[in-house]
Every structure is written in C-alpha cells, then in structure tokens.
Length: 306
Image (cartoon, rainbow, N blue to C red):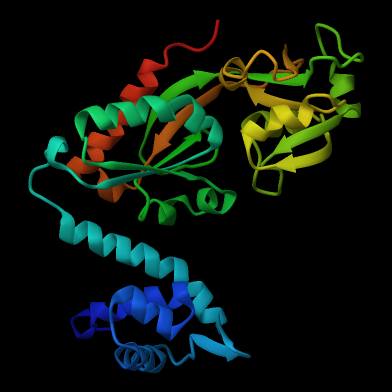
C-alpha cells in the first residue's frame, strides 16, 4: 500500500462514523454536511470492501470488520496527533496538553492527588486524565500504550516495555470488623473454606497475591468478583466474606469502614508498583517530563507502611 495516496481526512471521518454509528451525527460532530460525509463513507466502503455500517431497522450497527477497526483507528489518530503537535522544546508552564494514565482505583487513590497537584504546579494549563485500566488493556499493553501515555501496574503483568518503579506495598487479608469466626490471625484452612471477594478474577486477570496463593495450592471459594479495589471493603463489611487488599489502601479507609486487616498466612510476595510506557516515547520531552512527575509523586507518598 502506498501511504502517499492515502487521505488522512478519511481516518478522521472513519473515527467519527464508528463512534457515532450515524452519518448524520458524525457529520454534526465534524462540522461537515451530510452529503460530504456520505461521500467519505462510500470511499471507505470501497477501500475496505465492507459496508462498515449496516442498517438494522432504523439504526446502524458496526460490521465485524468495523468493530475490529474501531480501537485501531483511535490509536492511529492519537499517533497522528502526537506527530503533528510535537515541538522541538517543551515548556511545561506553556503546555495545554492532556496527559493520560491508565491506573486502577487503588493506584488513583494512592498516587492521584500527588500527581494532580504536581502537574497543576508545573504545568497549570495541562490536563490530567486518569482512566481505569482493564484486563484487555493490560493484555495488549504495547498497543494500548501507543494511545495512552502511561500505565501504572505492579510487576508481573507486562514484559519487554520500558518502566520505572514507583513504590512498594503489602497485601493483607481483610475481614469484617465483627466477624466472630476470625480472631487476630487467619489460617490457611480458613482461606480455603470462607467465601471470598476477588478482584480481577479470570483466566488472565488476577492480582499477584491471588496468583501466588493459587500457586501454593490454596484455592479460594470466590463468591463475589469485582474490578474495583475500592468496592472491596463494602463487600466484606458485615459479611463472612474475606479478601486480599493493599495495606496502603486499607490505611486510607475511614475508621467506620467496618473491616479489619490481618497478616497473610502465606508468603504473598512483594507488591512493587511501576509505571510502563511504549519505547517510541523514550526521547519525547513531554512524555519524559510526565514520567518524571509520576515518579516524584510516588516519592512523596513515602516508604511502605511499617
């Protein structure tokens, strides 16, 4: 394919069409006339040999190819925007860029405030976008990081990408504060018989501590699955359920959260949070500034709990 013959405007049109699933709404989004966008859709259909949008009743649906193209188009457009907004020098005080981080709600709770404050101090015109990471984004980290600045994630999930270590934490077992069946300690036998609240529980989705537990032959009886660490305390409080949670997060909970933390009765392994990025941004001055800002934010939260 000869890239010189491609019209980048078609990429913009395709993105709007796949997002809106309507020629009328996509044309309004782009500030174009409906006939103009209809002509672009016709060109796109000829190029791909596919309808892209198929009418079902009064609505349009994405064809299988269009659904496959949708995330790729967004990544491509983000890449184009980064190319044409690049500057030979970067002055944070003059920046109006949006910096993006994929992070769990745990990472947001621990680091978000410090990162937002530092960015506001050094780049007051910039904006911070904290997006929730997902198992799918982590599984395709290299592709994800072409369109997102940084991914905050513990070691053990991503390999062969540049990273910087941020901070350490410990895993603890949380139980209801009034759970009569658990004293000051919890046994391995109880871990196997009591109901669990599990986070990111699936074939490729799990926390490092949960994976370590299963490697040791401890199979939890999972009763509830959640993809939010912050929902765990409410799902444990007032019940007989137990869960694994990060100690830094537990210490940030209010005294009346209704849970208490106990040491893990097995070697859960270290929790080392890190920030990951795509190597194409290694020498990008804006990106380097933002990476260093996140590292400094992590430094501010101090050593792990004693």
